[in-house]
Image (cartoon, rainbow, N blue to C red; front, top):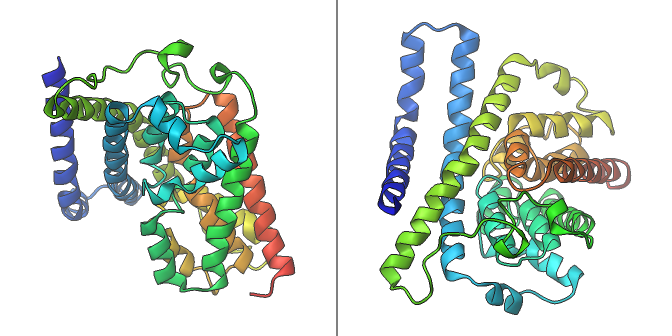
Amino acid sequence: MTRRRLATGLIAILALVLGTLALDAVSPMAAALQLPDGLQNFLTVFLGIFIEAAPFLLFGSLASGLIAVFVSADDIAAVFPRGRLLATVAGALLGIVFPVCECGVVPVVRRLSQKGLPISAGVAFLLAAPVINPVVIASTYAAFGFSPIFWARIGFTLVVAVAVGMVIGTPTPLVRVLRPRTLGPVLGGAPTPAAPKSAGLGMRLQSALTIAADDFFDVGRYLVVGSLLASALQTFVPQAALVAVGRDGVTSVLALQILAYVLSVCSTVDAFLALSFVNTFTAGSIVAFLIFGPMVDIKSTLMFLGLFRGRVVAYLLALTFLMALLIGVFVNFNLAW
């Protein structure tokens, strides 16, 4: 069974690589079939979102498998500060060590939670990692340079991630926050079939790949459904109505937050999309777009449902949305950028 799972995971990786290479060939094929314009656009957008996000999910799943096998609860306890606030701040900065986007961060957080990572730190990492990582920081600099928008994205992302992490991570039974599969065996969750420390390196790496394959398929179903929904909204909902309100101090922020949620663009490239809005939307709305979009979008919301209970996901979404809205409005009315 272990070999079969490992083979399935390797096949999935190969299919992902081949699918990425074939993306450029799919659109001409769809055009040759003379599909209706709406369906053709839907398929193109879906493939773009999914193939853009899937490699990062794969990276996050591989990291999850390595954590399950090579990281112990004692390691987590030794690294993270004892105080809840300091642990939450450390979680928000963890993306520098694990540079994963909003798709790859979910399996990593689930595995770290099973190893004893505090909930507040896990939520802060979940929200901050798509921005506070070297790749996204570099892409944001390439788009905006060391401008106020660059510093606002980094600073306000940390503020939102730590604040929401502190709220979600208030002392409460973990069974009311996490899904049963996320809980460790001590709290009633299923044990992870990881190789023991006494096993050889090869066997432990094989175990890590098996766990990574399981995580990839488990979280990947949420990615597929989220990508389908995002594609449908992008294709069939007119976005011109959102652009029409781009200069108002409040509605422009709301419009770009909704657009960020609908577009579900990967955080590694969203800065260049935001750059195209500079002459149309207010500075505060662009900041809100760059903060809220990487934290929560359609596909990540569905992926969160595989990690947290539904009520917790609703709180997380509402708190993040409201804080990004307040930040955007504050920038529009109080800072002359």
